[in-house]
Amino acid sequence: MVFATEKDCPSLLAFLGEESWKSSRKNRKDRAYSLVSWVGDRIVTAETCGDMQLLRVTAVLKSCKAPLADQIEDRIEQASLQEDGDYQYSCRHLMGFFLAEVTVYLPLEAKCREREFKYLYDKMNHLLDINRK
Image (cartoon, rainbow, N blue to C red):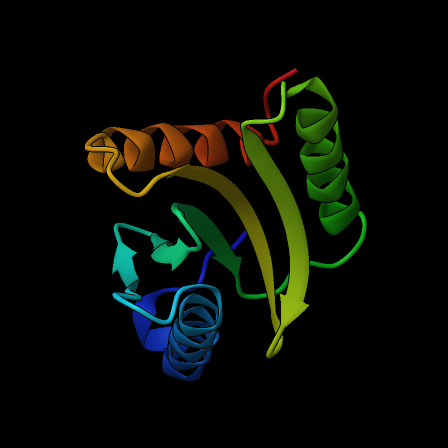
């Protein structure tokens, strides 16, 4: 499994930034905000979504073909089925990269954003630990 770095995909980061900004403007025209940045080896996103804020951690793999992509997608699906609804998981191919994402919605006034990002980051690392049983 080879993860992309910020230097590998500036166009992807720009695309995700634009996608996030458009979404936040559509869902909350007044005081909309959007943040997309690299933190460590992951992309983190924060944006307004109505009266909520969306937080997302994305792992970007340079290339991910079967059977590895299938393993990751299976883990994402299993995690989705085990969750009580607070966290959403997804995978997608975008601009030649394979993205694995975990997302949570919080109230706009929630002050625990940093703690939630760390939790999302840890969840993603756990999901991508292919060697665990």
